[in-house]
Length: 266
Image 1 (cartoon, rainbow, N blue to C red):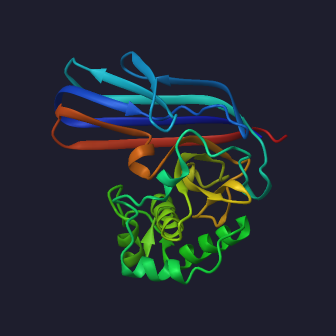
Image 2: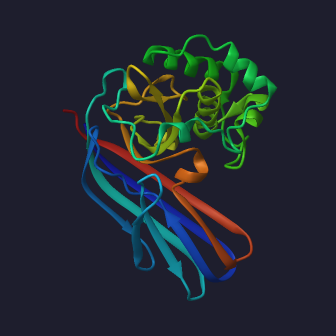
């Protein structure tokens, strides 16, 4: 499938910012499941290109002149292929698998999550991972405005509400509690008319007999040809599309629009 993707992010500040630095993980890489046809990030200054620990493309934006807004526009096209049972057909990767069994601040389980992990049943094939995603959806309803990017998996479970990021963190917490390597994925998905879900998060889980299996926890399905992978990490904090700091600025307002359009259904 071929998609066009456009992602606009604008920060407005109450007063002038004297200095700001932003790290952008908004550029996908070529993998066995996707090919980048074209990709561009329009930013208010030159972007320094590098790679982070997980191999994600990393751009750094530094602004040293006073400003009251920052506008970032991502625009590109990508080809994707269907995955059988979500299997990525990739090896373990550059990071040792045990790294992805370690809980983080956002995935550390409490008693309720630990009990849920114990009761999850066998997790040895891809379909059982999708079944676990369904159980997460039954416990945590998709609802915006309840959690924040700093919310933990345990907090989302207690609230019974959350978004794709929370669902992903819950899946990570449960799989890691069972000793399964699992990593957070950020990217885009073609969801038709539901435009607010185009920017998305899901997980990869390593199974001994299947390798990395991509699972969309929020939709309880495999993340296959409708998905554009951009960054991976142990949780949101290591795969966030934009992270940064600033000096000055006062209150901040954020505007985000994302459009994913199907161009060719191969």
